Image 1 (cartoon, one colour):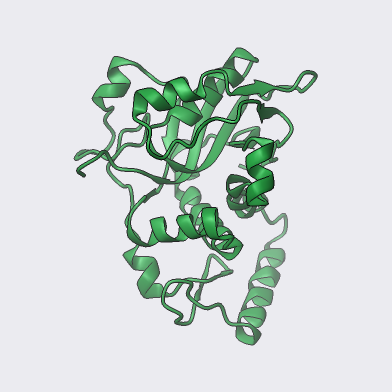
Image 2 (cartoon, rainbow, N blue to C red):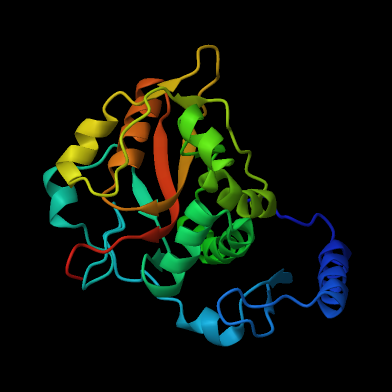
Length: 255
């Protein structure tokens, strides 16, 4: 992994600048209003108590990220029918405060939540890179259909990925793939209905060079249908390895 700071004093300078700015404009916790904190030198809008209370997705299927009772195993669904991507890394559970922050970002235009969640994800990725040592060639945020993006005004996946892409110097490729089908809302669909709903929804733009190793980025993984369809499209176009990163993973019903 390429270091973020080429010279030792540069890291110290950035840290001092963040300290100075946070003393003048202190970050405030988006969840309780208390004073925020510095995480790896970055001022983040979450206090120490709320940060420590976030629910982590620590024991999960290493392939699809679904929570399990034992870590490092593969779930029955992945054993029976492996997905088209290699792994999902989703460090948080889609519960409580994480769910609240993501819903407000997605439907209430709370873009400040994207900065906070993106920085928290970037911090978690530091350990992920140490364990896996796999730096992707590019990140592809899951695209919205143009009609839906006009209605919302932004793509939440793109806004979330900006802080970590900047920190780790990974290019964001927004032109590689488009969503050609305005699919129905996935929220109330079953897993099978989601797969049928998404069939053929994505297309790679002609003339675009397809990177060998791509990370698909989304805000939350529910059944994995969206990222699986996108991974299938990218592999057909020539990608060799697809990993998925997301802020959160939805537990199975009843968990």
